[in-house]
Length: 200
Image 1 (cartoon, rainbow, N blue to C red):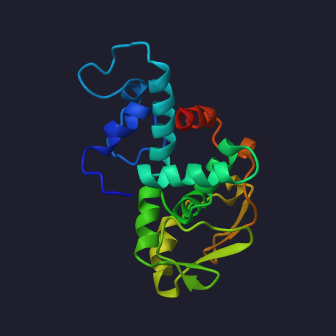
Image 2: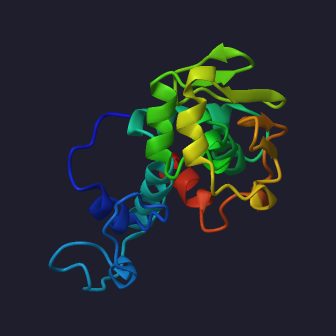
């Protein structure tokens, strides 16, 4: 993802992204967009509604505009429901899998951990956050990095882990058992609006 140097929490607030990594966050402020006129309500055009949903999903997974367009093209190429496949591709990213497994507190932190070479997939080092994990892939932590992750994973509750992965907290191991179904992914996403955005 191209490096974004502006205040991230403002950008996330504008599009309703939920898992904000900003430390200073007042819940009442997230009900409206940032800025002097953020509270002013105005009717959005159809295009703005489609664009906002696309931006919300894109920013949630910390994906660049170019990457997101590639995921959409790949989802449209495959057989099945394009919107569901798009979300499945995003959920299969290595940085997202680590985040879902509780090995990091934010996706941004997860990207950094992968980029620094702490993560192994099927025993081989992978330092590409966008690497797409496949069913039955096993994700582990490099031996000399385990102490770092021990502190990060102390609060993991295995009972609330996503159903499509198995997490071994003691061994710091994640088995990506299968691709998640649509009903198991974020119900707030309206991926059909994204399809309509790219179909214009």
